[in-house]
Structures are given as C-alpha cells and as structure tokens.
Amino acid sequence: MNIAVITGDPRKPDVVRIEGKYNADDHEDLRHLHAALAELETRRGYKVRYLDNHDTLLNDLQQLKAEHSIDLAVNFCDEGFGNRNSTDVCIPALLEILQLPFTGSGSHTISRTGDKNGVRGMLQALNISIPRFHYVQPGDNTLTLPFPFPALVKPNSIGGSVGITADCVAHNAQQLQHAVAITRERFGASVPVPVEEFLTGREFSMGMLGNPDDGYKVLPLLEVDFSVLPEGTQPLCGWESKWDYESDYANLFGCAKQAHLEPEMMQQMVDDCVRMARHLEIHDYLRADWRLDVDGQPRMLDVNPNSSWCWNTFLAEMAEWDGIFYADLLDLILQAALKRYKLVPANGS
Image 1 (cartoon, rainbow, N blue to C red):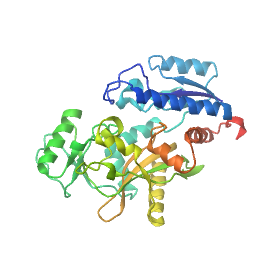
Image 2: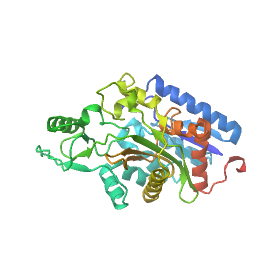
Image 3: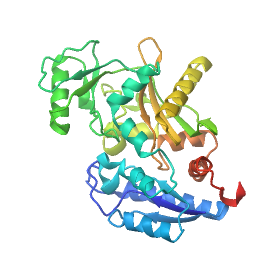
Image 4: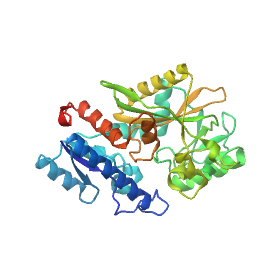
C-alpha cells in the first residue's frame, strides 16, 4: 500500500506562527509523525513517502499517479497550500481533480465548515444548540446586541483560531467596540463581523473516528481545564493557546482532563455530532467543541473536520485515554479512508 503524506511546507513563511515560519515544535511534530508512520510501515506494510514541497506538489502527485505509486494520499496539510490559512481547501481540491483517494474531508466540506456563518445556519436547521449570535454590518457602529454580555467577536472564515484572542472578549459596550475595531483592522471592514454569546460554562471537545457507512468510534470526552489560567484571565481556548507558547494560555493544551457527563447529555452530544457529520459529509475523523450555557446545557461552538494530526493535540490525547496510542490513531484514520474508498487494507486487515 503506497501512502503519500502531504504536510505543510517548512521552507515557506507561515504567518499564523509568531515567528512567521516553522519552529522547533513544528519540526518535533514532524519527527513524531515520521516515527509513528515508520512503525506502521513495519506493522502494516505501508510504503510511506512525504510530500512537503508545495512548489513541486502538483508535479509530484502527477508523477506518482503516472507511476502507479500512490494508493492513498494523507492530507495532513492543515496550514493550507503554501502555508496560507485561506487555501486549506486547495489540497483536497487538487486531489479530487487528480482523482486520487485521500484521507479526511473533501473540498466542499472544508469550504462549508470554513464559513462559520453557514455552519451556524446549518446547525440551527438541524436543531443543534449553538450560542446566540449577531452580525455587525459594515459601517454599523451602534453595536447593539440582542443578548447580554459577555460577547466574543470572531472572524467568519479563518481557521486555526486565528483572530480569536483574549481581547476579542467583551464584557461591556466599550470593550465590544474595541474588539470589533480590532477584527475589522485584521480582516477588513467590508464584511460583517460575527459577535457570539460568550459562554463561560465548562468547555469540552469531542473526537470521532470513522464514517457514516462504517460507524463512528467516539473517543473519551475532553474538558478544557481553565483553572490553570491566572485569576482574571479570560476562559478562552483561542489563538494564544495554540500558537503563543509564552502566553498564559499555552498551558491549556497540556492540562486538559477527561470529562464525565450524565449519560443522557453525552448521548445528545454524540447524536448531534453524528447528524452534523453526515450533513456536512465529514470523513474519517473530526473534533467538535462544546460549551455549557448558563442552564448547564451543551451548545456546539465549532467543528473541525480535519482536526490537527499532531502527537500532542486534543485528538491524540483523547485517543490515548482510550488506549489508542499515536501510531494506532494515525492507522485508524488511514483505515477509515481505505474502507471508505473500498480499497484493500494493508496485510488484508
């Protein structure tokens, strides 16, 4: 089984990162990925190669296809083509044009989930509870909300929590005006600015592996432990927690804990995730974020169809709680894709 793994391009700039380029942690993530897939090469018989040069990616894929040297592409390019966050749809689109099987969701799904406004509308149509929201139109400086503070100002179509920082949380009209101004400065003033009810209850992340036809494996529920933050810090799992390793928020990813909810609530969240995944045609793996409202009821915050593949992320941590270590987690993602395409798994299993 010939596997081609597509990642971001470490040669190119990456504006999401503070340094503007790949750093030591990114290279450590790649080392863990290579080690885990090397283990699967021995165990499963995979033949793995890596494609990380985006300048030659199209030619590389065309050549592999012409040589019949690619059975499955693994789309682990979370950064987007050329490490540009707005181009994450391009990699699955390219693989679809070349008619190559690949892991994860297709370009249509990535495009739909990248539009947070569209996702909110879809979730409402499916009767899945979400935070209340409002759109501040271009030129509107009245900033009257149809729900009480606190509120969270966030961009509509940027992934990786880009633009979601502590200064986007508003507890009064003055802070809201400041947060809207910052968002307009960062992402343009010609588009509506989403403002969401900022829930301050417990926050959870739910991971699922598989596909509708083959069934889903639900991983243990993860709870973000905001108690590790200094007093007075906004209880927010945003950009700082993922990319600013010197911030107070950096500890959130190392201090998550397994959550235990009432069976009825847990089942409701699972059912909602399955309905959402079916509707959006999410493939192989996903992670959905939830938060409790003032009444203790779960509301879906966001969905990540191609959740981060790194060894120390929420998805990997949830899997490990279930006895699924990193190499096995990657294998389950590959196996889900192979089954979906009705390809023969390696070693016939």
